[in-house]
Image (cartoon, rainbow, N blue to C red; front, side):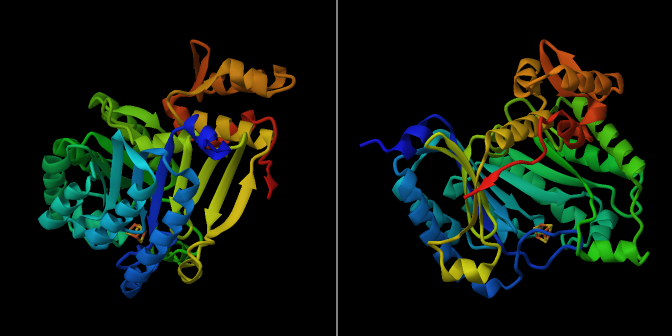
Length: 393
Ligand code: SF4
């Protein structure tokens, strides 16, 4: 018998995310949910398998199009833990023939043995938290890996996987445009087909925020950061990368299927503490979030969801506008008109952004310009018919 859940799921692609909440130490700028107690790894994976079995039973027989191990630092844990989780997954669902299986990894974890372990699990994409290929900058960021180590593992990962992404941060203390260009050119020389660029931002209650407040650290100002981002866009384009999302650039065919799926509002199930899920089921769209406490998560792995939000029509429209404008595929002008009862005002706003060089309209599609990518979220807010609406269940 086909249930309503199955029927709805067949209309949208399904992805899985696993939040592995362990790191060696907390980097000064990071506010992600994580712990540094490695003695909890085994208990965590036991709970993760219980949560996964319970929730996948509801979509039994579905096909999964991508699996993304994120965190935290998934490369820190033994590959056998990830293998057991994949076995749990395979009891309920199957992976599509071309499924992308990604692990986020830190350079200091990537021994030759570990790289081979991941490959033998069926991992076919590696996302390396390089952040920089420069020793001084890594030190300024408080990272524990070295520049030489990073270059070496990126090369080795490319030889083994071919499908490798590197994260680079721009705007570290003392970083000049020259140094930033050198970082980018080093990434190009490794031949990686995907690069994510993040600007160093001050998150609340991080050590970096306190260093900056106390004058211990001075970061490049917003203008300098924007100039670095713009230069990165130019260089990446020259190297044949497509700027497909605000922070993401890929060679043809090497975009992140998992991330693109989330931005295109395909269904995804997030497992592990603090993981988010999005489901289209029974004609409704539901976003849910798991508990952000490892202890509570491990104590009740079958009741991990802390909040469930059924999206109202307005909230769905706002999401569509917000997410579409972050992507190079953009937003159809007709859709935007349709979202507004009286579209004359929003079309005026679009014209204003176009005059400022932040938006472009081509073939009936609105896209943010290279200059506008940095302001995509602010532009999107101005085009929404209502602000952040939703109803709770
Ligand atoms: S390794 Fe990544 S997730 Fe872990 S603390 Fe550093 S930035 Fe955060």
